[in-house]
Image 1 (spheres, rainbow, N blue to C red):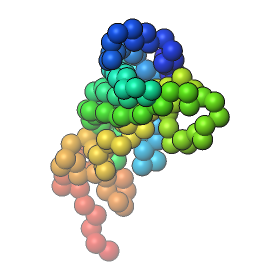
Image 2: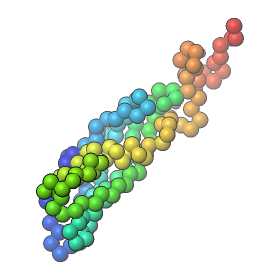
Image 3: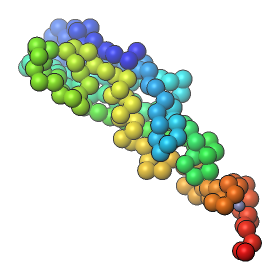
Image 4: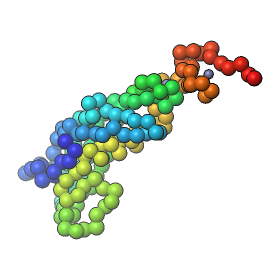
Length: 155
Ligand SMILES: [Zn+2]
Ligand SMILES: [Zn+2]
């Protein structure tokens, strides 16, 4: 699922509703390299809390993100804990000025885009296979993790 319709929530007497939603997350480019979540899905926990005419949406999930190490291009994986909050005013659908950054249009929440942005915010500045990754030789591209003694004779 990528889009969630808030109208499917039936608050009744409750002021808070929880839903566990599998959300499809497209692979994304970070630092020029491509990263993805397992099977392209995150298990997102969505909480909708009603206060008067507005609804506060909280999205929370934890997911591994994997792709190439930004130093040696080997396999790298980080665990991302993401959390975001969106406020939805009731009746926003009637041409009210739309919040361009927002993830909610009318009653539809764009969970796919939201989840992706939340992951991007939580990624480390450099995604590495391990902290002490030695990277590749700048001259020939040899993997310095495999050949720690690797060097070129100075000309
Ligand atoms: Zn590495
Ligand atoms: Zn080299």
